[in-house]
Length: 446
Image (cartoon, rainbow, N blue to C red; front, side, top):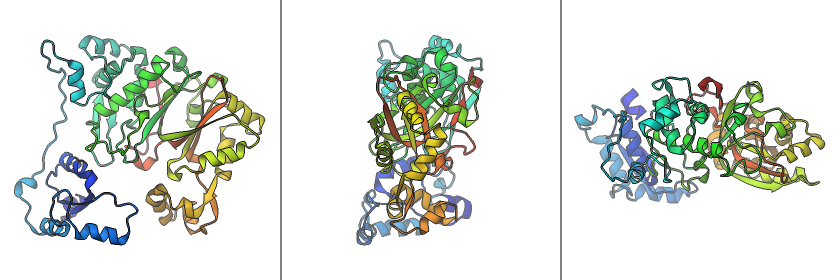
């Protein structure tokens, strides 16, 4: 579309057929519903040159005509005048939902894609007004913007619209500052990546105790009302306030991610940790309350630190994707054991992982993420990736750079459990605003 709109060059975009609905949606919301396009079969990744040539020489699986005929026709036939005028997109949302006597409102919300397919608390005027008591901010104040992918325009929304989704999630008014902070972060909890991104939220500071969040036994599970409903509200508002989250259209995660239900929301166990609170490493004081948004895909779990703990960390983390980073969630027992073994703080553990979790350069560059994202940095001469790109295939190079390694302490010390999550705060190039920090103030939304 950029070639057409900015440079006046006729172009045909080629897409895999799995993205047909997404492509149509993106073209429509960008004002070019008639943007010329052609399709090849899925998958494209790991196909041989002969297989890819067969795609080009075969039929367009969406149009049902020879692929090259579609391309030639699109480039040579005049574009109808009505397709050059563009279209507007109605972003208005009615304040009230129509209802009939005896209507099943839960079904209506599901059918319109406003839920996570679980029952919601219906957001009546009275309930939303009560929720708004949780903040001093005006209901019409703009909170921020969200979008499901980098290819759609961001939608802005107000405090009241966030409150509506907080009600639907079953949250209490005193949780609203946390939910508003997450809404203002610019990070969607319903990312459309085909890799099925999930979300994790860690809360720090005094508000943990004020609203009764759980940092101990079962912190990452379904055992605490604040944890569960704050995370659910974040997911619902991301879905509803960014223009929807519809599989095949605005959500393309191949398998989806169960983390999406509650966004793995928990408080850090600051009191039991031997280390500084996570948010103080990112510009906040211990007396401030903040939340951090992590993009995560899954985790690897283990218990305790045996004599072979170094080899265990290398094995657990060594198979993860380099670009995505890793976040360790350690029970306080594990954090204290690490201190006794010569790891005085998170920075020391991060430095150890960077130095000792290494993989052969050949395997590093054979990963999907390195090929598609890190390679760009290497070709631009950005270090250390430029050097990694010239390393011998069997040379051992760090799997993660230090800024892609994060450490959080949570758990009730019933055992020395710890998890290595695949993922970290989202890379700036995929953020709505690269200047936004993934660690955001909660206090500003009180």
